[in-house]
Length: 305
Ligand code: SAH
Image (cartoon, rainbow, N blue to C red; front, side, top):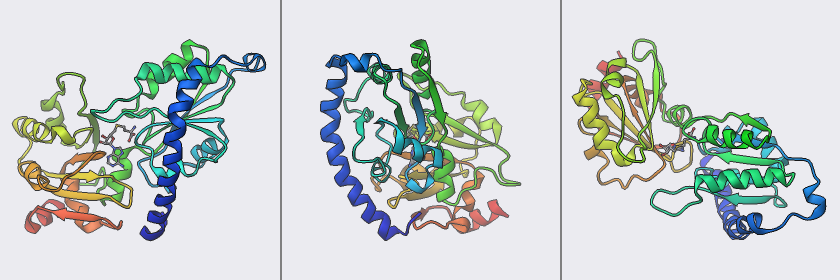
């Protein structure tokens, strides 16, 4: 991880590059589905699709294999959560397509993304399908792989650091800690209709609970966990834009977290971490970050004793 200063400078270059990406993405995406393959292209071998996890933001968290794939694939198809700094690592002669989803905004439907990947591979392109975090953790990587396999397209998976792991590490919160938590459960708070979570089972686990896509459901999560028996003093962290220079961490407890962030204009992506390990954040904080504590110190010390 470069220091904050150079990270921001690199970020600016990345943003410039993103402007170029946005311009390319709409025209190339339209073209891919409508253009007829040239005769020599249609005889070419079928390409491979690489499902690549880009990690939670910091480009230095990419694996060497992911970096190699980004640099060598013919086309990169990426999601909203892939950071501009990571996009800036894509060589300038590659095609780059944006298929990201943003809540409340129009995005490329999953079926169209699947069809695009099939089309590109059938045109003989080696495709880097780049996703935030890990493609197999709330990333629909499995669905894309199933579709590609149905078309006899070869797929390779390159794991990435998932948000639960990356963001908690950058916030100084160990997912497990002797005496505080002997397990960790990852939960999605996203639901097409009603959220169907077994709250009693989650509360009974006594695990660190990590909620993805939970920001808009923070009060529901707190209420349900309290009703299911979790103490209202259980520490909670909200980590916004984890593993980036803009990371903010808010720490409170189950009863007060909603109020604690009420005026903070917290935005997506944000991760919610519930459990006693959150009490270690103050002591283990190491990353240049803005941490706002709303827990009283005595309580923190008691929890981590
Ligand atoms: N495949 C991804 C998760 C995609 S779901 C992964 O493995 O990490 C999107 C959710 O992930 C966001 O709503 C947020 O809850 C979480 N997330 C991803 N990146 C994050 C980041 N840098 N900071 C905080 N939360 C993040």
